[in-house]
Structures are given as C-alpha cells and as structure tokens.
Image (cartoon, rainbow, N blue to C red; front, side, top):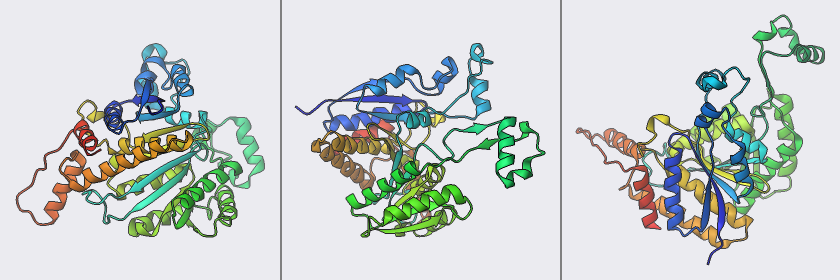
Length: 399
C-alpha cells in the first residue's frame, strides 16, 4: 500500500473548482493516494467576511503536506471596497491577495514556472521546441506589499533628507504621492539564484539567464546581479548571462530556443513567465510551483475567468501539470520515488492527448480553426470542443 498524503485543496473562485476537479480525476487515475482537505479562500469570502484568506484555512495548510490551489479573483483597492458587504464597509478592512499572503506567510520563496511547447499544440507560437523554466523570487521586490498612500509626513521628510532625487517631489501634496518599495535582501537574492543553478545542474540545462534592469535600478538590480555573478562561479559547467528585462522580452519572442533557465525578481519574473506561457499555448498550459523549505503550493498561473465559471469550458492542462509538479516535489521531499513515476505518466499522457488533437478544449480548437484558415480552407471549419472534465478524462484514459 502506497503512502497516503494530506493535501490542502483550495479551489478558490470562478473556474478554480472546475480545474481542481479535473486535476483530481488525473491524480486518481495515476494512483495518487491522498486525503484532500478543502479550505476557503477567495473573493466570496472577502465580500462576505472581509477576509479572502480566513485563519481556518491557514490552519489547514499547517496540517498538510502541501497545497493544490485553483484560482482566485483579485481586484483593485477601490473595487474591493465597493464589493464588500455593506455591514463591513467603513471598518478599515483592506483587501490583500491571498496567494501573495500565502507565499510570504509560508516563505514560499521560489516560484518555478515551466513553459514547454508540446508537439502538436495548435497554440504554440512559431515553434514546437520551446522549453523554458522561469525562476521567480516570490516574497520580495515590488510585491513586498510595503506601500504608502497618502505618504506619511515623517516618511517624506526622511526621504527628502536622505536622497537628493526626492527634491523633485518636495512641493507635491502628500495625498498626491503614492510609494511602493522594491525591497531586495541579499539572502533572498542568493536563494533564488542558487535554486536556478541547482535546477540547471540537476536537469542538465546549459544556460542560466538573469533578467534584470541594473542599468536603471542600480541598487536593487545591482545587488541581485552581484550575487548571481558570485554564485555562477560555483557552476563552471553552466553558462551564465545577465540581460535587461525589456530586451529579454524582445529576444525571447524572437529566439526562444536560445534560452533555458531564466531567473528574475518578483515583478519581472511574473511578466516574463506570462510572456513565455504565450509562446507555448497560453495560460491554459502554464503550471507553477511555489516552493519553500518545508512547504509548497502548486497552481495554474491563469486567473479565475469568472465569465466561464460553471461552463466547464476552460483548459485544465495547466492545473494538471501543476499537480504533476506537486508529485515531483513530494517525491523528493518524502523520498518516495513512486511519485516521480506517477508524475512522468501524467506528463506523457498530457503530451499524447495534445499530440493526437482529438480531444481539445475551446482555446485549442480555436487555434486549430485559425491555422486551417491560414492554410487556405475556404469553408470555415468548426472543431468540436471537449469540456474541462472530458479533457481530464481523456488524459486519465491514456494513463
């Protein structure tokens, strides 16, 4: 009898419950032995309770091996305040993204986002040989959550006294200034760079690229670049480069096959991973893992797509591949090689379903129709689409 695992399951909002349901079909087919402990998270709990991440949910995560996460709705500060239950308005409640909160609370410092083009995917952009892995620092940078609006007078005075470039803002009313801090620490920079190199070493990757903007963001960008150069010396068999994030985006669209493992700060990594996802079919194929020293959370990188909620229309492959990553992590953490075998079976089944192209979701069908049109089909071709659960069922059958 295989070991039984305790998995926190947070379906979230919109299509989140649907893609989690699909992933569980595949996990069952591969023989993953687990108890799923469901928790509350997301927009509905913000609106009704004033908290998108209730304490009862945090307790569930603390009692489990890892977490499988669906999707959440996030809106601006003003929209969040407007949608709050009237009985809770005016009480000083502030919406904060639960996924960002979980990353910081459990120190899930490393976000890994594989972006792989599976042959036969009609949504692959330009090429079928793209195979990138983005390492995104997950707890600091501009997502640290240290923001001010209006700016406290004491803070403004300190900034005016300590930095000459603040003089430009000295006569601007405090209520007209907003400040977000881009905070880097040396240990976090070292951690994300080292994780990227260790991954490259483990999987025989040839190149690690740091995407930054150190020519403008001289202190924060300079700190991570400095640490990256030091750490790279310990991996002489792996090539290392540093690029500017804006140029990196351009080159990556033009020549994605030239890159391998990319590492970036929180915001830049977020942008770069979405761009990379589009190269391999879009967010419907974009899986991710939020990895800490003792805990991990796995999620698709797409949003909650509320307009599709309840229709079982969206692509579940990103969530299924996230579940595959979960098995790989658990296998390493719990010294259970059978989980790596199960993860391999899931990926092979996903690749086979994509390659055959017989069972396709709405987004994939649209890609096929568009390619047929480019090839000169005069009569519009409509491809029959499968539901979210039908795609999961087909992957399960391949397993």
